[in-house]
Amino acid sequence: MEQTRTIIGVDLGGTNMRAGLVVGDKILEVSSCLVPKTDNAPDVTQALIKTIRDVITPEVEGIGIGVPSLVKSSNGVVYDVQNIPSWKKIPLKDILEKEFKLPVCINNDANCFAVGERVYGAGQEYDDFVGLITGTGVGGGIIKNGHLLPDQNCGAGEFGMIPYLEHDYEYYCSGQFFENKYNVSGNKLAQKASEGDEEALSVFAEYGTHLGKVIKTILFSVDPKAIVLGGSVSRSFEYYKTAMWKEIATFPYQFVLENFVIVPSVVKEIAILGAAALYIDAVGED
Image 1 (cartoon, rainbow, N blue to C red):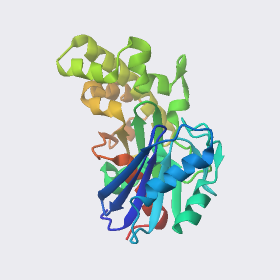
Image 2: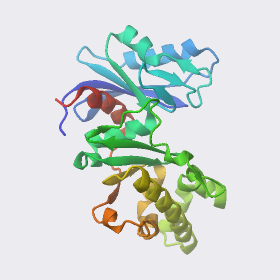
Image 3: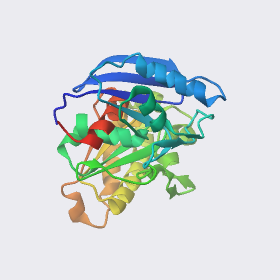
């Protein structure tokens, strides 16, 4: 879906905060700074305001923000933001709308990924899919009828937190798996796999089996047309996709799998674009 709007997309991470000026499907300018290490919550808020102000223009019609936390959907209050200990309960939407006199949309980072794929990426082809991030953790965003699934606390799709084996799906289906079980980074293992290392390929096959199981859980609970994979581990898709599909093939309702697809994301800067897409999802297309 072609977009021509001018929007600010903000990726609020635990280490860095980045604001991008998004015009259409292009990021024209990015401002970033380190998240202040402080127990004073207003200092973090002021740093965010400055980061946004550095890229804002008169043409901007809205601001979207992705945060690594839960968000009260009704009022845009963020809770317990990861790696920002001072942000326990911050009325971020209210603060920023008063500051910039613009509508502000806030959601968690996994939901931003999903709606970003819907507006700018592989999800443009599907009205019904799950965007699944497999990186440092595992989190998902659910697109139904072409829009982000409404929920109370922006937490629908947190499949990684579901108990599985001795831990949860995140332990086995994120980049943590390689560190936790084999004491090796996913990047190093991918390098070995690219060289045909049999041991590395075997580890990725084991990972693929675990990922296949969480995908079956998603099929049971959400029944999507497609899954778009993002995050660092998705870049190694070719090394685990066979084992993943072998596990998915055991899904008891075979007709469900006939048109079900899984594709890795190819969108660069999806965190900023996904945040901008929150606004588009909220107000509708051009």
